[in-house]
Length: 295
Ligand code: COA
Ligand code: MG
Image 1: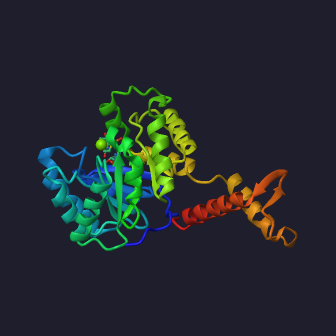
Image 2: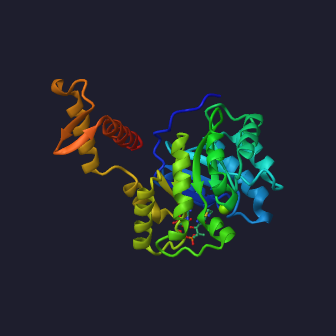
Image 3: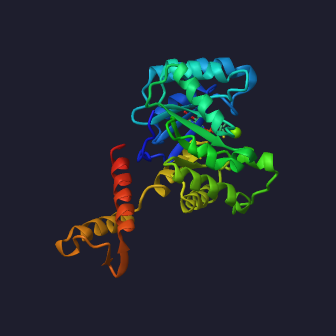
């Protein structure tokens, strides 16, 4: 399989729900989340793993999720459930799977091969959790494994990373800056999407809003979410603003003027504007168009 260009598919709001919770999977059909992460891993107790797997497979097969991207979070291949999870997902046909605790290129290749054996079509994507110290140390090699494989997206698992590193991140998340920045940088180097970690305090709307904005500043495409009340804010923060869209259109228009033909640098609204800004402007308009098409 050849490498894909970076997806323009909006991934602003990626809502987790426990695969053991059929009510949540039903409610998800009414929520404006870009991505649904049907979880078989951390949010499902060992005794409930088999039931959750059956329920998730049935929900995916039944469909009804519209344009939402449906991703099944499986258990690790090394766990007692991973292979069966991938086999069941392959038979049900979600858009892709999210694998936990991935730490090496070799694991990416093993997951890719497991997806192929499970009958996933070529366009089905592999998303991986970045949530262990070794994943951060090996981040470049993990991202590079995207070349020729299904790997499409990094998802930060900051609750696990905090546990493993013993970092005590406060509201500013300074303790995670290096991990967050390395993950986004490695993802961009290989054309992958990158999604920020969850915000656990469901009741703290102001804190959640601030953390979404911080994730945007780091370059993330969206945020993983745990509750329906978080969807609208993530959708708003991770979408280009009307101002950004207007500026992008102005840049594109300026470069199409006959007097600017063949120029590498021009002035738009008093600002130096180069071809790299034109590329960014085209990206902003493409993202905005992709978001409009979801409605
Ligand atoms: N996805 C879809 N629907 C959800 C949801 C989710 N993540 N979390 C809550 N809901 C639904 C509830 O089913 C309820 O639906 P209803 O109005 O039809 O009855 C409604 O939203 C309100 O839920 P609320 O009572 O506020 O929350 P709760 O006490 O039922 O659940 C949690 C709280 C934390 C257990 C729940 O939000 C949850 O399981 N979140 C996801 C956890 C997860 O997947 N973690 C793994 C990754 S970190
Ligand atoms: Mg985890």
